[in-house]
Length: 84
Image: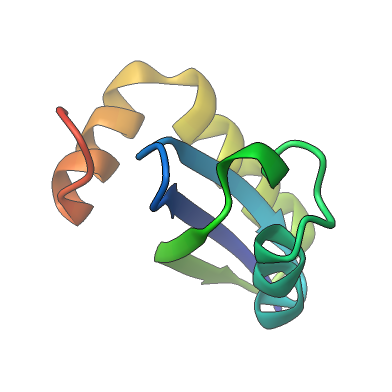
């Protein structure tokens, strides 16, 4: 199982989008400074995730959210994140 997930920084309100096969472990890494990309914005809160049967499907969803403005706006609206 693979997961597409969204984190929200409780410090800066920034969003982080990613994929992983172990959501609990990856969340721990983000909140304990083990990810260079998210370390400056600790602490993080998990605000959304979706499960997929394969890594390519999770990657496809991540790309859709990151690079398609409408998809990201819809997701932000759905989860009540920031100004969608």
